[in-house]
Length: 168
Image 1: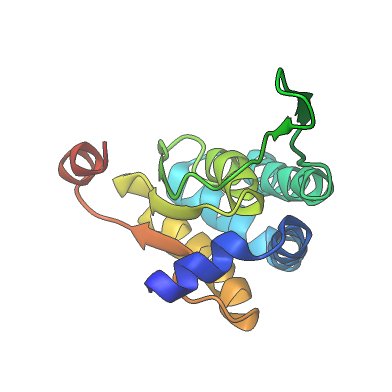
Image 2: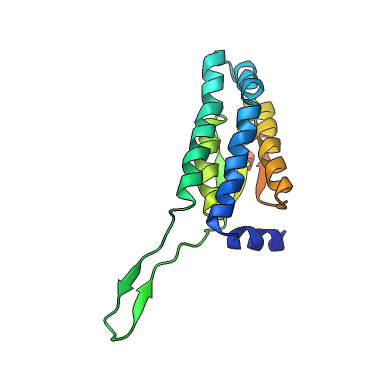
């Protein structure tokens, strides 16, 4: 697990972006089914369930481009012959706790950007939309596994307050 984490963090951002693009493609392929599941489990009308999935797809597309533009800066130093560099490093684990009313979009907003930055995700979906949480989690984990990563996203379901408080 630690090796997988280190390998994910040191994978170049454009390659992580390619994996996020593949997550977006997986969402495109399952958009109707996942949107219908959001409608069924959460109670949104079908068009809003599909809109939830589309928001995740859109943020994946944006993150792919961002993965090629995340850069640091080079600063002048007060010392002759020296310079300073700003380098972006992953922060590690990113906890995402999502509410029942936006079970896909909010996950997507947080996850796509954290993934291109090299972070791992611990996601706790709302207790009332556990099927959506499991389905979406499986889609993302399958894409990551197909690319050789097994420990990048962890999905948690269950009693929200106890788990959420432990995560926070």
